[in-house]
Structure formats: structure tokens, C-alpha cells
Image (cartoon, rainbow, N blue to C red; front, top):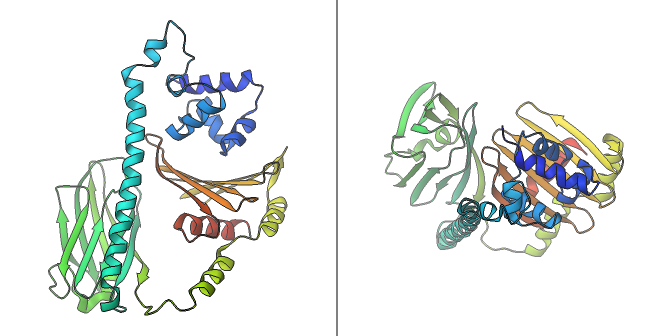
Length: 357
């Protein structure tokens, strides 16, 4: 395996007499991530390559090609292929950002339109599922007074999806709802009560016993879908909104003093870095606390993805990046105050509560 980029990173690091820990601290990642690059096990994501170019005072094409630019290789380094890689990264990042904004606009427009006429009649469920070879995230099941929507898109897998079948189990008997052989996703819409797909007379059966059969090129698996309610319009007026917000911040915030004390008690210390590694079979968690910068880095490795949270205690700032390990592209990134109400913050706090407190 060609490890030109990894060797180049090692060369640049060695020239500055930096250890792998030193470089990892500057990038707010784990030392193991740097080690994996240098031995050719993985390749940095494009966002990391941009940071590497800044740190080593080089151009992005030089990092991508794994060599410094000279008068003999300048044309190769600045080739159309390199430009296309950078262009595709910027395009993908822009599309992801625009798509997220559009989705948020559509969801909030939908909720605002129906709220006052459909008290407690609007229910939104997050649809997720996981099997050995397939993962579903961010699906939606929306129940309103007049409409029913169900969507599952972007199934995470290393093989092409050939067919999807949605069905419900009622007392052990399978009732097929819908199948799709055209695209690797499902979108259903019907008038509430029409019962072509969903019989709302038996709503609880659908919520608790909904399954999907995924047929790929190499595997066919049946997956139980988890439907978690994330919204119900059960508030007529937002009375005492300020007090509620303050209470949420108190509950969801982090006690930094307690956090540091537990880290120093449970973690192993190497120089100025406290480390803890946890293997939970389906996922691996790696914690690094940099005492000199008061920053806690949490890496979660799950099938097909690396998730990195960087918590800067002095600023109450949390950043998040999710990278797909098959092509090392960043698929999600965000940052916010630790007391904000965001899903990536809630997941981070849950990890802290389960493993450090």
C-alpha cells in the first residue's frame, strides 16, 4: 500500500522534533490517529489535511501529494486531479451545509404551519437501526392529524443496496407494507386514515414492531427499526420559557471541576496527557485530556465512522466532526457552547456521564 502521505507527515513532524503526541495535540486528535497515518493504516480526512498544511506552512496540494513542491514537480503537484479533489471536497461540504439548512427550514415550516390547529396531533419519530452490515441514521416517521410520512435514506453500508422491504410483525406474523427496487431509500406519504401503508388504528404496533429487510449485493438482513419520539406539539403557550431554558442548561451542562477530578482519578497519565481507552465491542471510545490546554478530546470509533468531540473547558466550547472511514470524508461537523441544545452535545454529555462520572 502506497503510504506517501503518511511518510511525508512523519518527515515533517520529525524535522520539527515533534512527537506524535505533540502533533496530535495541535490537531486536537489522538496520538493513535497520527500513528495510523504514518504506518499507512488510514489517511487524514480533507479537513485534517487543511489543518496540516497550515501547521507545516505548506500548500494543500503538497500535503495531498505527499511531497514538497519544486520546480521539477510543481506541475504534477498542481495537477488537474489534485484540483479536482479539492474542488469535490469543497462542493460536498457546501452541499451538506445547504441540505442541512433546507431540511431545518422545511421541518420548522411544517411544524409552524400545523401547530395551532393540531395540538398533540403532530408526532415526529427519529428512525434508526443497526445490523451487521447496514446502519440507518436520521430516518423520520411523522404522524400528523391529516398526513403520515415515513422516510429512510442514505443507508450506511459497504455494498450496493438492491432492494428494501418495509414490514410490520403483528403477533409474529409478517405484514408487508412497501418494497423498493429502484433506489436505496424509502419515502412514503399518505392521508391519515387511508391505510394504504399504515393503519393508524393500530399505531402502537407500527411504532414498536416495524422492520426493514435490506438486500445488498452480498448480504440480506432483517433489521428492527427503533422509533424514538423527538417531538410532540403538546405546548399551547411557551410560558416561563426563560426559566425552563435555565433549568435545561443546569441539567445538561458539565461540572468542569468534577470532570477534571474524575479524569485525574480514572485516566492514565503520559507526560501532560491523560488517556483512557474503552472497547465496547460495537464501538471503541478513546479519551485524551491535555492538561496544558485544558482540552478533552473524545474519539468514538464505530463501524464505518470516526466521531471526534473536542471540549475546551476554559471556553465551554464543544466542536464535533464525523468522518466516513471508507473515503475519509467529513460528513458532519459543528460547534457550539456546551449548554446549547444540540444532538451532538447531548451525545457527548451522555458519553461523559456513562464513562467518566
